[in-house]
Amino acid sequence: QVQLVQSGAEVKKPGASVKVSCKASRYTFTSYSMHWVRQAPGQGLEWMGIINPNGGSTTYAQKLQGRVTMTRDTSTSTVYMELSSLRSEDTAVYYCARDGAGAKGWYFDYWGQGTLVTVSS
Amino acid sequence: QSVLTQPPSVSEAPRQRVTISCSGGSSNIGNHAVNWYQQLPGKAPKVLIYYDDLLPSGVSDRFSGSKSGTSASLAISGLQSEDEADYYCAAWDASLNGYVFGTGTKVTVL
Image 1: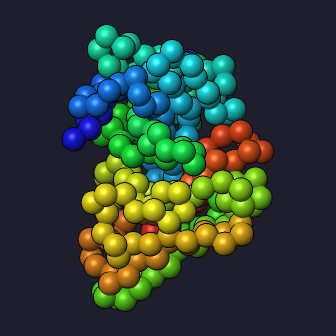
Image 2: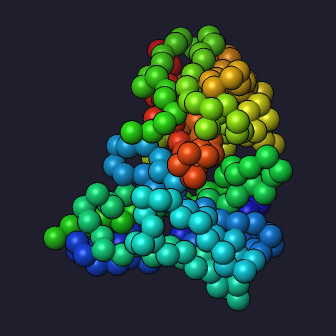
């Protein structure tokens, strides 16, 4: 069974950066793109962007352009999401989610357990 | 504010059927596949329906999806207490050049 294991909870001050990891296992890492989705407390889901582990190309949500960076390490089958210039509105649970790699567009077939990032002074 | 609109909540008795609507436009639902996700309390979301009406392996056939024009629907038949969760529709939006989620619907089993 596919596994996506994320790093632990983080507490950051406004203006700082956070880097969340997502380690994939039990499938061919470079064959599936990975998305990041976040959810503020009591709110809905927000797509952040996607990274293709095969080459490292990325696409980010317009709202986060300039603040988010997604990278990958193929030697450890891990993807990373770094968010800079943190503000209180960035407090959320961050999920990695594998793309289903279907022919009719994106969908997320496996999800990580989530990482809570709290931004507070 | 999402471009995909869902009712905030629906409720029904056990063993009954509920339908959740997802209203969008030509830039999203009208021309792109719709997916549905279930999020149980305190858990990560899980794909329930993909590409409008396809059921992933392991998902109960009590769940079904449909689409017509710029709207999509998720139906849950034979409602069970374990179906109490938040449900989100989602699709690509060509105007926003990004993937968008619906506003979410909380299902309560009476």
